[in-house]
Length: 178
Image 1 (cartoon, rainbow, N blue to C red):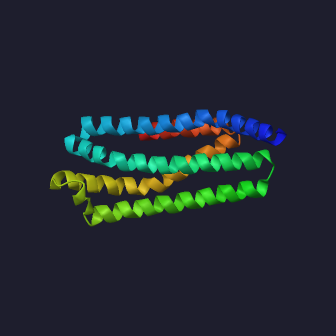
Image 2: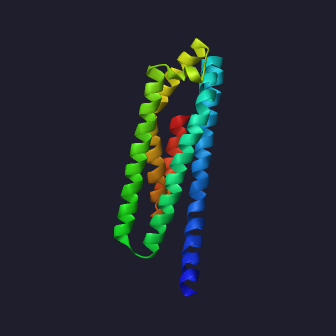
Image 3: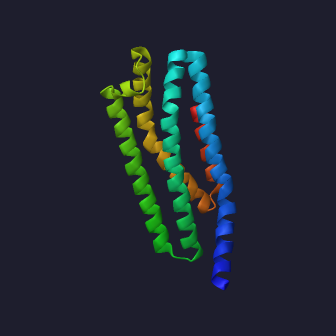
């Protein structure tokens, strides 16, 4: 009973410690989408807005994949930190970063291939909208590894009580996108 109670306390403390940062990640993603949509509709036009709208489900999938890695790694690292198993912390961190890089690069390559070889025809029949989508995919593909890696590092900074750095990074991310 004592072990379960201490594990519960550790998990509860970790959960409530990381919850604000998980919420902040969601807010950053939502605000980036809003900024992209406003800029596209007001400054670029309907074709660009269409490209962003078609890309949106892909972006949600990518964000969900990244959050899955963030959440799982945070829980594993937090548990290892609570037990003072620093070798395990390093292993979990390294595994998370390597998986994040590999998956994000794979997604980027798939988007580039889809755009360059016009495989997006299965998503958009209209050639004007498809050309805009292909250009948007190419532009987005180069930022995906940095985005996913940034989300991972953001979570590890919060685990290490680097709150000021985490908040500054979030603010810079928001301002840069705006």
